[in-house]
Length: 547
Image (tube, rainbow, N blue to C red; front, side):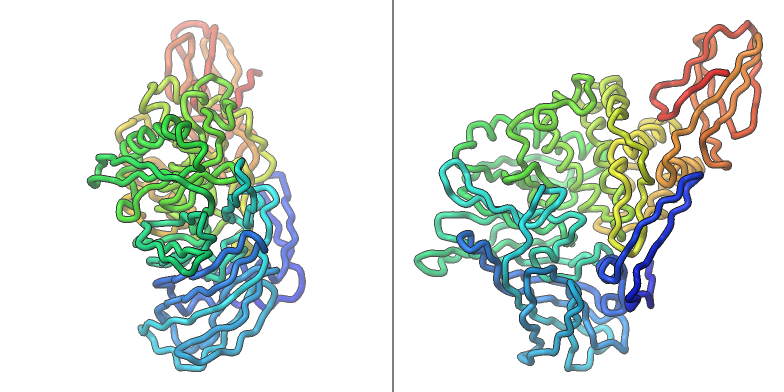
């Protein structure tokens, strides 16, 4: 979905979201629009290949090198190309076919003025050079950048993390989610006593001089920008083979030297995760690029085929059960959650970060599907219901479009509970599983919008779920099932919801379950005996009040 002609605003944009009775206001700048929208200088060319070729110097905490950007011309009449790179890094020059090009800088957006005619349908490349000290990650992975640490032996331990902030915090790229590069080569030069682990497969290690080595990695599949990573440390390797739905999958593990024994035990969850998620979501989407778990100096992140791990070799979330039910201690949260993103985030990717719930809601929901697979449906329900205590209902899950704006953190467990509720509405677990697998097949390696996901689930389920999605994604109100008992008559309705909210719900009246379809108007249900008890199925994320 393209939005145009707003990139030259020099005043503050003040969008308002009117949701129910709430008004959410946010100030945005021209830089937010340059970062978050499909500008004319992005729209005319389609990424085909990157070669990121850099040297990382741990002593000076600098990065220098180039990115060769290959692209196909898909629209005519434009010879200016936008590349993004965040300060304090500096884009020093751009070259096409041996000619150094003029570059106009506008904050973190850099406009390269091409000398040659860019012919429709043709493929070209431009090499951009950069250098400097990248932003230091303050609280990775949430406030990312580059993490410069040392291991217990005093050796450098370095990693990138940049979701939300953007990959342009450490390398120059077309930093918008809508256009994933088709393939990529990553060459990283590091001190000789260290190793770099990036995405895809290691194709060569090159001795540069007596002090450095270059690790060359190749990614065969489309990859989003924030999924690209570097991990530099005193790594040791072990691995295994997994017989999966698409054949033999290489599962490779890179951990700090002193943690090898712990990792060999803890990383058993990786194979279990693959088994559960191939069952629920379909084949792992990146067999050609392998699967890796890589120890990192922060909690973890879903870097494609190079999932980073920093959970302290403990089950739960840093040893804590987010659901407080006991079930969260049955698995290593980072291995399960971040690996789940290989399907929802890396295979299916949001076009605009405002729709990041597509990544996080499905993957938070995947945690209980892991439990469902190994421990049963009751365990999975108890877990996802237990995570409701984390929900804030502070602002809508969907953010503001075209300004690189995420929605509420409720995209995790409110979103998971919305999906769990939809599972109840479908009331057919095989159909639900076929929808989850179908999403990953029909949107294989694609960027998508919320509307596409909503429409797909409604169509495949045979249920119009638009009111459900509107309520949980676009408002902060939790529907209240309001009821009154008058002898053998139950009066009921929805309130605290959108006017068109009409979700059905499973209710036990005197212990007997019946489906009701409330609206915002009072309705009645007559039963044979006087009503003594009314109970809503706890798997539905709603509130209840009696009058």
